[in-house]
Image: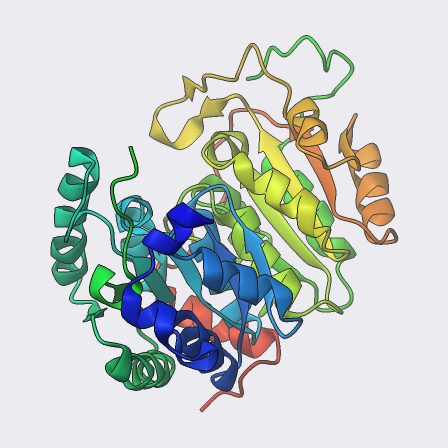
Length: 188
Length: 202
């Protein structure tokens, strides 16, 4: 699909299939035994979501809201199963309450992958505004977060951050920047 | 309290009494997630069990949290107790559960039509919406109103014998919770994990 291809960065498109950003994320999740993946979809996340659905190791499904997904992986963690939530920047903006009342005080290693919209070519003013709320919210709760811009750093950051979340029983947000994913560009 | 015309034959019960009846039935270390406020206060008052989880915030997430537990431990029955006001915050979760069809998840809605704990203001649904119809319309075919306490116990027994998610709605009075949960989130979570056999105490 032409539009989808335009939304993938040249580096990502030319990389061999197991060295795309989404293949690295999938393999890192698997290596860390993270098998439950609720998500609210995002255009940029589409190849990752598609491949997660295709891999029977993962239980991958859409939820109606991001906080619902946070509740699900929190319950799963307490039941002994690891999960991660996929979302877009605007979805993260709905999470302040559940972070402050569930994930942080109950010490749950909530692993979040956030596809970053609102920067580096955003065409929707609302998206650029909501993006500016994300890091202040993360910082206000002193939550670990990393903005991933480089393919060669992705595996290290994701793998180490997941392990740190689990061992320190603290949430982490991994922000997938357009420099990594290609982002979403104006398409009329 | 709900003036819902679609449930004219439904007795108005009491949350603590119904919760106690449920707990008395649990013989296999079933997990119970208690929603925010009075719902988990009465779960606490009914007698602490290591398999109880008490929510101190995140209104509306009792069903999603219970779904996560149910997906992690498919051989254990998982109950979720939620208030009608809380459920209204997260109706989409009903469809997620209907899609995933966990065989071990039982949802109980305590419906008094009010936000009791904040001053008994009526919910927007109180006089117009039917929780069971919403659940059925969301894809949860095995949803029912409990007509009275005996019927509630019968529905719980039935839910524990079927291989699909169940939702039981109970009309309750406007009484506050009987106890108050000790607000120690880390200990609540840790003891719950011990109760589920995920961890051993230090």
